[in-house]
Each structure stands twice: as structure tokens, then as C-alpha cells.
Image (tube, rainbow, N blue to C red; front, side, top):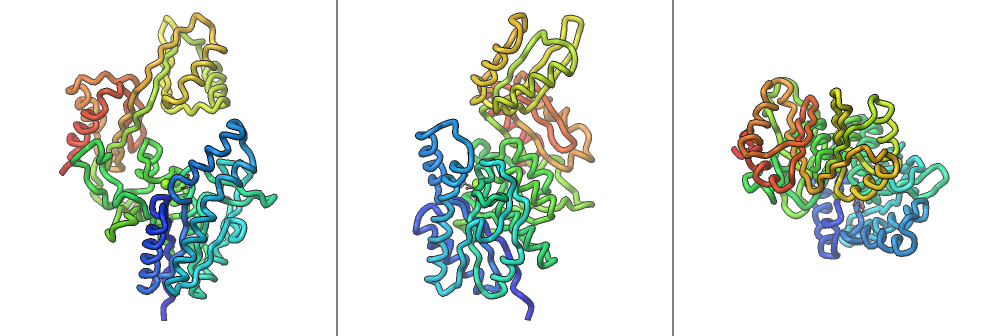
Length: 409
Ligand code: ASP
Ligand code: MG
């Protein structure tokens, strides 16, 4: 008899947010076992729990980063995997809850932002072959010195993909990763903003990576990067409804890709414009190193030069305005004029089809022009175009661009 296919199933915080929900997940997993699957589970903390733990740490010392912090915030997952294991055992299914050190999820020692280096896939496959369901704590790892590390907020998605990659390496067969969440699909735009947003059936890794980086909150960027690297197919699907979700996988060659697959947006953006700044890249190198050092994440950077001097504009998130402003005022001469634009929004179109269809940029900007939306900064790659403008124009612009590329059809 063929061996049961091993499938990694990741359940996020809302999917295990209460005892009722944990029972529902257990029933669903039991059903999968009865259908002949060998599930490996990756589970987040119950919803709200990680936030609660972070706020406890904050009350003691808001600036603390290090092993004690990671130990604290990783503890939510220990509760959810144990409860889920009990709920499965109650249904007659053998289950083994596993913390990172018990399984062997090795990471580097960058606390709060650790990266997974290896996972003991053989152990997981062994348990599956014995008919045991491994239930792995998401978000956490263990470093060389046996200290608990965490992978960054939303990191359980990354755990799930890393498990699938390790299993695949062990069995030499593809291992699918299902991410159960509170939406049924990835949509062509945020359905809260665009009523005509459509369910997407299939996306390439590259498209999903761009979307994650550009403001789609569904998957962690790092998780998609890892899936692309190890060719782990992901299905994003609902934890509440039995329905096939969105598949994320390798780009299919020869397929007639739509020109644009989705419109994403990120409100909460700010732009800093500086003029005149010293000529040459040395100044830029120093400025951006300094901002990075302060923890300011800079997104788009544009720079232009004429006889009057060098002009610089860059975007950051609204929260980082005070940090960035303070740094700039301390380091730049008073002759440099700083213009701050807060409450901007970034809108992007993403699609691998752009590679073969010229004219996407022109349609995108014509659309914004018809709506009289002044654009401050722009950036493009082979498969995306982004523009930043005043957030007041966001809703009408997202809707118009969604329609322009036929995504409402
Ligand atoms: N519990 C962690 C968080 O809330 C990890 C996760 O849910 O993916 O960020
Ligand atoms: Mg998440």
C-alpha cells in the first residue's frame, strides 16, 4: 500500500483562538487522517496571546532585546500545541506536541528575528510513519547554545514552510504546505476596499513575494522566499470553510498569464524630501546606514540631480517619522530643507504577465491622471509598478486601477 502523503498544515492564531476553535481544528485534522493523509501541524499561539506577552515584556523594559524576550514571547505556542494534542488524542488520534528544541529547529542567534538553519525532517517523517501526528510550535527555534529564539511576528508561516522543505528533503517527494487562515483566498485587491475583488486561484512565488512585501498581510515575505527556494507549494485556505483556496507555486511557462494579477496597497506611508543634499553616493550611503541603525526601514528611494543640487526623496512608514526626523535634524546641516509628507499611501500592481505585455505603466499612470491624483514617487521592477500619493486618494485609486486591468471581471 502506498504511504500516506505527508501534508504540513499551519493554523494561525484565530484558527486556535478559543477551545471551540481548537476542537474544530482537531476534528478537521482527524478527518484528514481518516481520508488517508499524514498531517504535520505547525501552530501559532491563541490569538491575542503573543501581543499580551509582548506587553508584559514592555512593562518591565521596553528596550530589552535578547534571550529572555524570545523565551517569553515563544511561550504562547506551547499552550496551543498542548491543547491541540489533547483534543486530537480525545478523538483517538495519536499526537506529539513538539517545541523547537524537542524537534530540532536550529536557528542563528539573532533574537526576535532569527533565521531557520535546519529542521530535523527525519524525526517528523518517522512520527508520521508510526501514525503519530506531530504538532510543532510555530514561530520558535533553538540556537547553538540551546537558547530559545523567535522568527519575527507572523513567523509561524515560515516554520510551516521550513517543516515542509525538511520533509521533502527526507522523503524526496513534494510536500505541500497548507496555510489555514481567516480568509478563503488571496484576493485581487483588499476586499474591504474593493467590493469587486476576486478570488485568485493561482499565483507564482514571485508574485506572492512582491505582494507580501508590498502590503498584502496574508503571508510573511520570508515564508514565501523559503517556499520559492525549496519549491514548496503553498495553499492559502480558510480554517472555517471547506473550500479550495489559492495555490502559490512555480510560474507556469507557456501559460497565458494575466497582465496584472493583483493590486495591493499600503496605507500608513510617509515621504521625506530633502533638498539640496551633498552630491554623490557617499552621502546617501551614510544617511541610509544611519537610518537603518536607528531601526527605520526605508522603502522607496529616488534621487535626481540638476545645477541647483541633488534632490532626494524616500518613503518610510508613518510610525518611523519621529525617529527619522530626529536623526536627520541631528546630522544634516540647516541649509537642507526637509519636507515631510505623512499619511501617504502606496499602491502597486503585480503580475508576471507584465514581462510580455508592454504599456502597463502607461495604463497605470493614465488611470491615476484621470482621477487627478498627483504622484510623489514611483518604483518599478520586472513584475510590479508602485506609486506613492496622498492617502486621501487611496480608495478611488485602488478601485479604478483594479477595474482598468480587468480584475473585476
Ligand atoms: N504567535 C506569533 C505572532 O503572533 C507567530 C505567528 O502567529 O505566526 O506573531
Ligand atoms: Mg499570520
